[in-house]
Amino acid sequence: MTLPTLLARRLAQLVPVLFGIVVVVFLFVRLIPGDPAIVMLGAYATDQGLAALRNELGLDLPVWEQLAIFFGKVLQGNLGTSLFFRRPVIEVVLERLPATAALTLYAVVLSLLLSVPLAILSALRAGSFVDQAVRGVTTLALAMPYFWLGLNLLIVFAVLLPIFPVAGYGENLGEHLWHLFLPALTIALHLGPTLMRTLRATIIEVLQAPHVEFARTKGLPRGKLIRRHVLRNGLMATVTILGVNIGWLMGGSVVIEYVFNIPGLGSLIISSIDSRDYPVIQGVALVFGLLVILINLATDLVYGVLDPRVSYE
Amino acid sequence: MSEAAAAAKSEAGPRPEILGPRFVPNGIFVRRIGRHGALLAGGGMLVAILLASIFASSISPYDPIAQNLRNTLQPPGWAHPFGTDNFGRDVFSRVLHAARVDIAIGFFCVLFPWIIGSVVGGLAGYLGGFVDTLVMRTVDTFTAFPFLVMAIGVIAVLGPGVTSMLIALTLSGWSIYARIVRAEVLVARKSDYVLAARAMGYSNARILLRHILPNVVTPTVIFAVTSMVLVILSTVTLSFLGLGLAPPTPTWGTMIAEGRNFIFMAWWMVTLPGLAIVVVGLALSLLGDGLADLLRGQGSR
Picture (cartoon, rainbow over the protein chains, first blue to last red):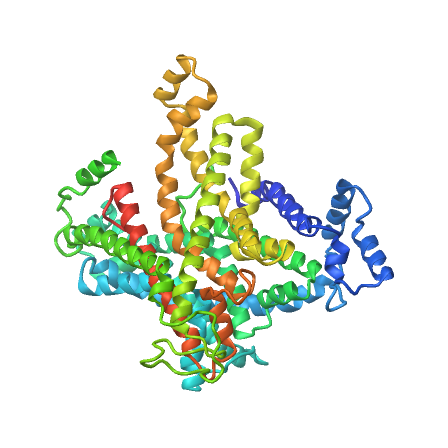
């Protein structure tokens, strides 16, 4: 099957899921107990304000019509108006997206830098003291709550030893990298262990595969053997794990953005809970859902490039 | 489980030594002992934590919510092993009292998605057809949302509180169990023993509950146990974000959230309550890894 056909088919499979995501996001507001308009605007809302909001949300229409209207608006990129910012939700969300994307990407890079060398070291000396120590540390790292680890890094590297800034995002690329280092490291310290474990298991498995045995028998130097025959297979596992964990990774960035005051989607959704800005909550949830789906699609496609054995049926 | 244990023994037998000594993991035996050690250590730690949480009132030196405004923000010392907070409350006593609430919430947040997801997945796999398609598309939809984003959305709708948290984590957690159980049921449905049961004229309900269920439950137990750490961490995170129990009842998450405002002068308000979470997390992941290996019957990973 060629890549375009594959892409078309995968996109067609996504349609029901995309539909489902819009329905769930739609239900967020409609399931509010009582009158959503009163809940959204608070106890001091004026009658005109309430009437205007009811009209905008179409609350007096039957649910199916409301859903159809909501759907039509979403397809046009209209996610409603933020009650707090008094601007279109799509604008607010797109403004915050770059910081979240940068943080996530940064965290992925850092976790690869952490986990790949450790996994190789650990797998080649499986059962040794080094291996046991690395595995112990990863278990410990996985038992820590994200936000607590982040706060402790802040205490040590920003308060006690004022090396890194306490909060914020910076103005240019250099400052972004500097400001985002501690938050990205926090996420990496969580993602890294999961990657490390899978990669280690894969390398141990590949080391026992016939083609590696053959390569060793023919006298290939060890370094070349590992680079050419072992790591390429390990790469596949890494991509899979990254794809599987992307939703979890982005959920984690929500809390980390809050802890480090980074102006991204995560801190946006949390501040929107306090201000009862339901259109923004809907918008952020929708964008997160879409991102996860698109990244999973990308992962599937990358498979084909990395591993020629993968044929899409 | 005796079958699984037997399988574990047979699988851990001598491995082929054709690969030469350099690459063979030499710690198989050591690691098997280590695994049982992990199970024992994790279980032991958990029992100790549970006892401490049950007898929190008798162990803790101070009243967890009694304020003492002359004694605020004291660093850890003999009188207050974990220091005091901004209201002069003893942090150690608060950590002990929070344990009961946090562990109970975590337990139910594992239990509910497990039961609901398994039932839905089992029905989808057994009934097939339209029900199956509908359920699986719903599962896809729910897995598309990041865990925390889903939970935050639900709590934003229902308002903060323990019930909302339970509903939120059930809604974001059930889909994985549904997927696991459905896959298992699809296999079991075609097996000889189900065919035999059907030939005997048993009802669908009886076949599902008495014949299929016992055969498909193990993978969900493994997943439930290993996911317990993540669920506890998620509930603590939600409390930290102010979406769980309201003050003054102490929970680990809210304690750390309060401490965050004093991060420049009282590190102990953040770091020490978190240590309790790490200890629980460590106990659960040791227990989870150990149990998973015991049930799955392999010594690797």
